[in-house]
Image (cartoon, rainbow, N blue to C red; front, side, top):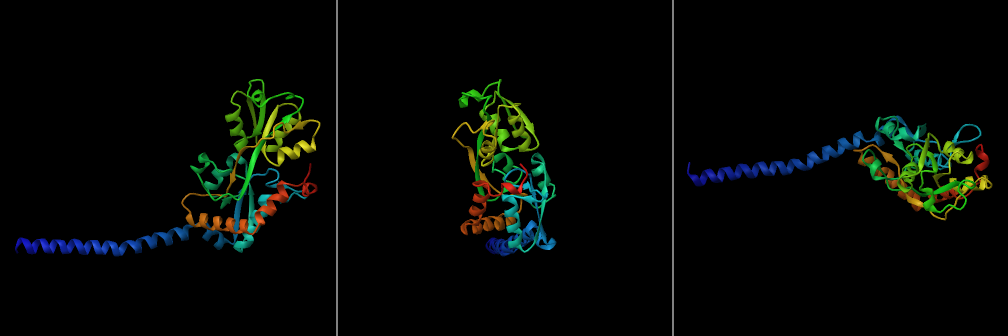
Length: 280
């Protein structure tokens, strides 16, 4: 066989192999896409007929009413989401510092719990687009902080209280690194420390600080007309599930466009009409 014919044959074999690879690539990609779809938590939710939502209890996102039932903004969101999916809903109350590990472990399908989107959390879970926005304000014991400037709070003589693992806790440490920080499992316990005079201040997402200040006007106040870390809150899902992100993002977009999310947010965050449903 001549060198010319041998080269032509080799080129033909190479072309055939390349053509076969090109033809196979779309099929492989389609197969991978179908496998991801089958493994999505959305399919699990549809098969089980229930969506399991992890959350922590804190006002007014999720709280117990006088009958012990869960009510709040997150509860409205979770129930509407389940209704639109045509499934039941199961809420799984979980301590704040354990809610992300519990999601990763598969204890529930999604976190809907006023969770701020941060880079640190995003290393472990994926976030949807924001479905709500809130900021943090300082709630201070009036007698202990009379005449304080913002800079005065950054002192070893000042004690803050906050929920363990929550965004306020990390913000306090960033803004006031010299202050002492007492940490508790619930926001209510941190606030009680301020009310009792055991801590100078706490931080929380509005409307809670302003609501507490209205409820105890002789004891605490919101000393500054300033909001810290006004960022978005998103649903948190396990990594590697693009179908779940796609569905939840589209649901948030539709419910935002209809005005429903704003209406529910305004009800729970800008008024006190619900206050008689829960214990003081």
